Image (cartoon, rainbow, N blue to C red; front, side, top):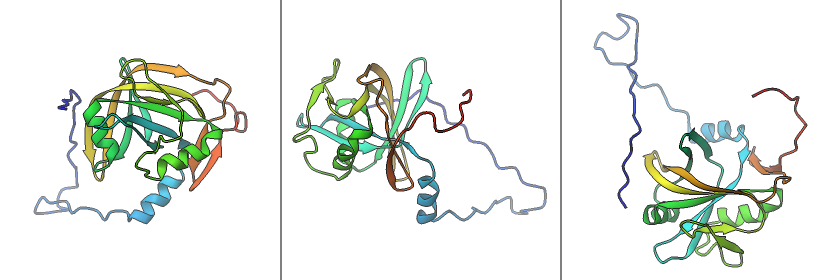
Amino acid sequence: MSVTSDYETTTHPTVTAAGDHPAGHVPDPPRASVPEFKEFMRGFPSGVAVLATLDEEGRPIGMTCSALCSVGLDPPTLLACVGRLGRMRRAVDHTGSFTVNLLEGSGLQLARRFAAGHDRPFDGVPWSPSPNHHLPVPTEHVHRSAECRLHTSITVSDHTILIGEVIWVAECDSTAEPLLHGFSEFAMWRPGLAPRGRT
């Protein structure tokens, strides 16, 4: 499947004081190490989702994902990150679509199952087909689901960013306490613990 993008990339030149680098070359700063970066990201707890689609043989596959965020509202668009060489990337390239299923607190075992890299992660997991592309939507331990049509994909480092246009959403349980992951632990969202404020 060939995917094109109408997103723009802007490069901002580096400005330095005159005379700092006579040859006009700004040396690259040292990179953070992988352990340093992982430790930094541990401090950013986020929700937990299962991304799902069908592979080249029409079998349901999925993976646990916490790298998920909204991109825009018109049209509704989100992004999710997957390994650039993984089965999920190849499957989404094949189908051109995927579902995003937000886990509730009871979904800890589901999160671990889809993070373990099983060849057939949906074995024993009940699901129903999404309304448009008939993709897997788990029917247990999920409080919200969305179906996305792939808009474009961008490979950066060792991951691929999937940018999807949201074409369907469903709320399964408005009272559920979402599953979170941070500081290398799973936890449940507890409303009302922090001072209320306007966003």
